[in-house]
Length: 140
Length: 140
DNA sequence: TTGCGTGCAAAGGTTTTGCATGGCA
DNA sequence: TGCCATGCAAAACCTTTGCACGCAA
Image (spheres, rainbow over the protein chains, first blue to last red):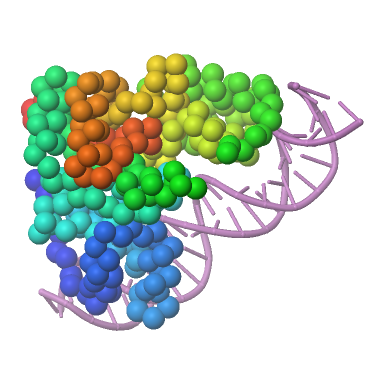
């Protein structure tokens, strides 16, 4: 049973969504979002209220930054089933890799069957380092 | 090259570590920690400073709570190689499952080889629902 | 017209910081 | 003794809230 709320299509809502949509695999802090959008088009409290609502509605994802301290937001591309596969995030360059791989489906089954746990890709971001960054790290 | 800091063994540091160690798979907010320890033994700012340092040193892990908003801390049991396997966290009951499974090693290889990405279990918590909670959810 | 959405400013709560003191090594 | 750690209180910061007005449906 979902909350049947009327969602009004306001300019502020569209501006925020456009901003996030136009940077597909990037993650932003509230600071960055308000910095980019406030002052001209949207008030700060509106940004906070919109973010909050978009998270609830599953339009954007709340993650945490490298150190784990900052809270970041990223657009979820429902058309590409981003809520069905895992995302790998490079702790160095921030790149997001969409792990759309049949091995993961097997893993999910295995974990459900053997470990008694149903994975939730939608709310999980797996951390690590991409190979390019790893090479760089080793050279230094 | 690591920061060579002298770490002093103070009573406050021990009290905080003991508190976290004695609740192995539980996660605490700063609020809960200060609530449990401050007033008697440790000052608030000391708790914040200790937490911050312990995170840097890899003694505790910073995660995020259910909604993704609250920041939580959990002790990392180095003796049990908790930084080498993934942790599954039930979004309903909060239970942590230590995923010490050889299939994960294979998965790590696969992802490194095929997807160009080295996973970092230490800083990753995989979300989902444990089967007990899933059953409960379905009954309701 | 209805009632959700917005903006401003104020309130609220959490985390950080400055500084003098305390305590480990 | 030399330095790091601690505690208090103040400052800084970020987020939420109240209220009146605006605007989508």
